[in-house]
Amino acid sequence: KNQVEQSPQSLIILEGKNCTLQCNYTVSPFSNLRWYKQDTGRGPVSLTIMTFSENTKSNGRYTATLDADTKQSSLHITASQLSDSASYICVVSALSGGADGLTFGKGTHLIIQP
Amino acid sequence: DGGITQSPKYLFRKEGQNVTLSCEQNLNHDAMYWYRQDPGQGLRLIYYSQIVNDFQKGDIAEGYSVSREKKESFPLTVTSAQKNPTAFYLCASSLTGGDGNSPLHFGNGTRLTVT
Image 1 (cartoon, rainbow over the protein chains, first blue to last red):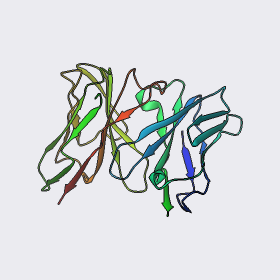
Image 2: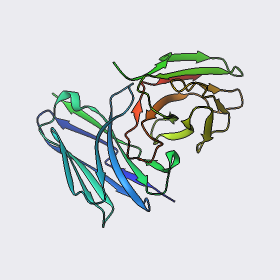
Image 3: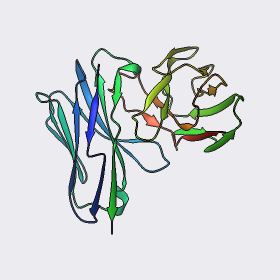
Image 4: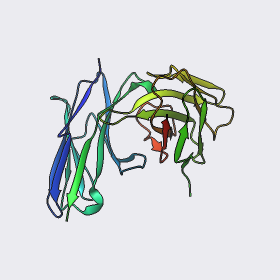
């Protein structure tokens, strides 16, 4: 069964500090991996997509990494801001799947404290 | 501004009543989806549609129904047969049919409370 596990479940850090969120998956065959940011009471928004051949991709202060061998991804947030407080969801797409080929993680709830 | 509009934002219903959640998009996307989000769980797919007048069941379709009569619209009806309907419902669309290559664009959700 395809699975996506995210850690930690929740995280509290001070404004200005860095943090790293983890995503481990067992989806096969792998197509791509996306990180989404979901503000409270809103819909998720795509931050970045990682394909099999990509190791690192940045989007402003967000940097995603992918290790396809160990089936792990991370999302690193640099110099955190209060607006980074949100849930971050890892979504992995299976190569052969259609709309039902997406597997969602439960998310990491990040709180940035001033 | 292009996007997905879900309405209403909050919805309250009595047990035993059917309720319809609205989802409209002006992104000209072919594919549309309904997900359910519960605390501590990942998003779960209820129904999806890759083309007008066609839709498929997702993982948790029981107690729900949909229609896709227009490209822009994909309403979800929560029927009285759904045993635990209280949840946050998210509608999404994508340019192509959900293979992950096109990002999902989400609406801002409808929080349904059934008492």
